[in-house]
Amino acid sequence: MFLEARDIVKAFGAFKAVDGAELDVNEGEIVGLIGPNGAGKSTFFNCLSGDAEPTDGTIHFLGRDVTALSPEAHARLGMARTFQVPVTFEDMTVVQNVMVGAFLRHPHRIGAMRKAEEILEFTGLAHLAGSPAKSLGTPGRKRLEIARALATEPRLLLLDEALAGLTPGEVRLAIELVRRIKGLGITIVIVEHIMEVILSLAERAVVFHQGKVIASGAPRAVVDDPAVVAAYLGHHMKRVRM
Image 1 (cartoon, rainbow, N blue to C red):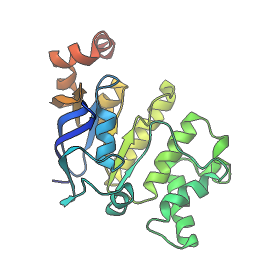
Image 2 (cartoon, helix red, strand yellow):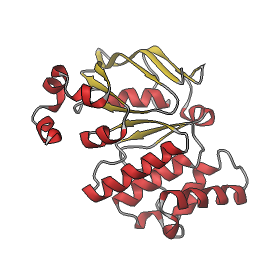
Image 3 (cartoon, rainbow, N blue to C red):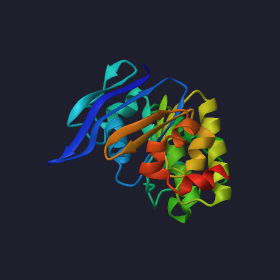
């Protein structure tokens, strides 16, 4: 199994933000994690990436136990992530931001620069290479986050609400970018609130509610599940079907 999480628990005192959640991801898939605010999906996501260590359970990536490994160790093994709120080096240029990721595999400046320029071309940011990161708006910052993650040459990309806050037109462009990333052979796990994004991109959807996985399967089948509608989608489901 490419990525396997078993019986994941993340407790904060007596409160279990994640309570026995499980996830299997096959190489080459796009898997969507969905659920209402406070459902535990972001905490689970942090456990996958190494930003939080589970209280209990195990996570294996490429056959190796990564449960207690650092984010840096995850990155070296081929796992990269973005954050809900883009984290940029404001006073550095766009290309320099991407070079930060590229240095993981290319320790010399020229090699890192070439990799960064290649990624900027792929993500549509080449024309902004020399611009300071602080000059970017929300769409550019989110794309820059993805670019920096791609520069680490990951086999698994974890996208944390990478399309949130975008206009419908910007969402369509971002969906196309994610599809092209998959075309590179990169496996993707995406946390997303926009149901249309999950329906457009994901081969499987996993639904969290109160720290537990309550449904998993093909996105359309999942959103038609009465338990999912009751827990999360409600009236929004009607809009998706229209």
